[in-house]
Image (cartoon, rainbow, N blue to C red):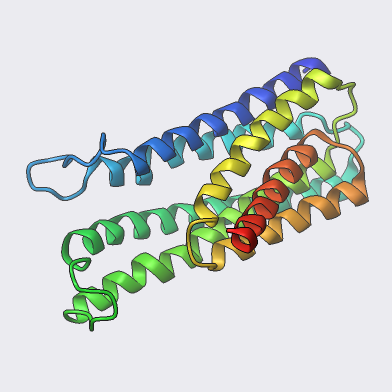
Length: 246
């Protein structure tokens, strides 16, 4: 694959993630998908879209991005390069599994939480053990699993960029595309962090921001490092400023 074609594919796959972020926002914040999927009311469209359609598109794009970055490798990588490739491949499989489990657990229990356990006044005791278990899975356990998968997937992409650096030329137009896509991620992070109590998600964003900065310092200027530093540092700093000044 030509260097310019490889970079163009990176831009395209990052744009897919931007589109997914926009669709996730519409799905969660609008009333368009609040109807039930079937007459037995097992899920709403918002839950089904969040659990199956949108994460699947995102994961396919993540996988294709990892493969695209790997196409920049040199043929003389040797045993060390192959071992590194196998290690990040294993991390990616584990990350995808945890990501999927977290989403599946969260969306189902979030639906049950909204339908059966969200009517009690704030601070009131939970109605029964059913609601206590549902709420714990919705607000705690599913988040831990999902964030573990999310961190591993993004770590793999950053490490793949470090292992197989892009050696072609990239100029102002390419930086513009990377910054624009990164800003959409930053906006999504800000929207999810700034208006809620500080929780595990803020620490995850801070961790990925530090990883992106550290890899940029260690391995130099690379497309994905610019994208991640724009996305996570602007999202993190914007949230901090809002919390302090708001």
